[in-house]
Image (cartoon, rainbow, N blue to C red):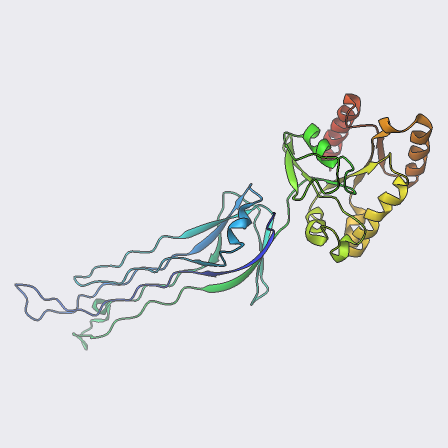
Length: 322
């Protein structure tokens, strides 16, 4: 099960307290203040990951807490700063602070993003010593670490999205275009989570099959429609062997319009798959019908090497110029 929408609490570590102590040893019966400062609390960071399943960690683990800084000690002993804590989030994750509405997007796997800042350690009484107060009997408490309630939503960063109704051949096409190994079957909803493969340096996402009513949550619903929003190019897979491929195409397009009309203007290649299952006359009729869309139309079969070679050439051309 893909977890792509969670709400968690992050609590950075509190700062350690400063010490209010006075020097006492064998040589000094009543020495001056020697309380050290407390250490800083740990920050909480997020960093991007290529693993789309990293959000599973937060399905039940709803609170992430960093360590508290250590308290200061006598003899000007400074409390140790707490270690920072870093969580992994899939690239493309959008984080929303529920209180402020501020949004952060995780797009980098090397640069951590600060989610919550740890508290500052309190100052010990040694620093408060002055000519007018030689024996300060107080020290600062460490400040509280920042606590935030965050809504975390995964939206893939993929250059190409493979879309279409269930069982249109998307997973098989992903296998042939990339090194991905998604499950393939002859029944609807074989793909229950999006799969990603690499076409050269370009990620391609196989989006689970959409059905009529997806924009309102039917079937796999809007859970996967949102993953199409960031793609640069769509390959719309159509099963040519079905009764009305033209209607099937518009079923998906209608769901796009209801969910986000901006999806309708994305560059799109229409792939009329499974033409090896119909006669030549039907193929010609479909090509003529779909040519009305003024889009790039490819007819063929995933089982024909020339079809796959042509699609690869087409992708190289489109991705290098867009």
